[in-house]
Image 1 (tube, rainbow, N blue to C red):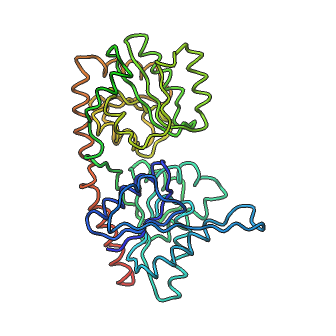
Image 2 (tube, rainbow, N blue to C red):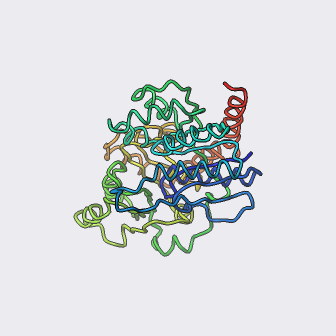
Image 3 (cartoon, rainbow, N blue to C red):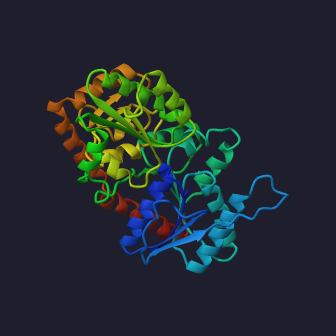
Amino acid sequence: MNIGIVCYPTFGGSGVVATELGKALAQKGHRVHFITYSQPVRLNFVNENLFYHEVFVPSYPLFQFPPYELALASKMVDIVQNEKLDVLHVHYAIPHASAAYMAKQILRTKGINIPVITTLHGTDITLVGKDASFEPVVTFSINQSDAVTSVSADLKRETYEYFAVEKDIEVIPNFINLERFKKQPKEHFRAAIAPEGEKLLIHTSNFRSVKRVDDVVRIFDGVRQQMPAKLLLVGDGPDRPRIEKLCRELGLLSNDVRFLGKLEAVEEVLSVSDLFLMPSEKESFGLAALEAMSCEVPVISTDAGGIPELNVDGVTGFVSRVGDVDDMVKNSLTVLADENLARFKAASRARAEEFAVEKILPLYEACYQRAIDAVMAGV
């Protein structure tokens, strides 16, 4: 199969999932063409079946904002024609689904009818898409897709609730590469950070308000009052200065809380951690939590969005209401207790194995094939 993948090339969840999906498809023998404005951060190895096509957006004084959607649609038309693609898979509705619709209409005038698969990832529906200025385009683009998938049942429910979507939405959850995300022997790194055997808590995100990183710090503060502990904060974003200020106000010394910035090899840090904190206000799935669980790190999370579909309360960690820091502190102490931690770690890895890429990949392949067959049959 010759597949075009359109995504954001950043550290964000949709870009990571799209890139890992493309890599897995290529390793299975499919030819995969990434179409985006820069090389995806996870597209970090060479494979004879992987191709990258940069979308160049010209800058003219006439345009206050570069016309990315038009440049993207034109690039899709070019790649579909010249690379003889069988299917286009666009990740994140805005602006990829609408650009794909435009490309599809242009291609039809050339006698080419290519199926478009749209995968909904979260904020394209729950935040950006609900903006009144985008809603008509999002609704139309989803309905014009040949197939639509979402990464969780909760996101599917929200899509139907907020948009007049007539298409059937198939839930295909996010997945994990178990070979990459697994516990690694990095004890020298752990010894350097926690020389006295302190418990290591970790959080990874883009440091935006929806992630409630201030709750992460308060949870950690509550835990460290009961047992020796350290906190690792991975990522960066607009809330970081405020979080640094909060740490100072709470008297958390620099060696108690480590800001590690953006890390590509996050699995190495996860491997030495004992507990992952995800007190988010909203998560469509919780990919960062899945990566942690795959490295045998239990999760303390909220009940927001699709997280409870992944984090099994009382088994792989615990689930609390959004903002209930006291409950998350209590649950953290339960997980971190010496008599409990090994059990939670083993259960987390076992749960992650249910989302192995080898199990999820065939669901996408089947989705592609159904869409291709329907287009060929003129349905």
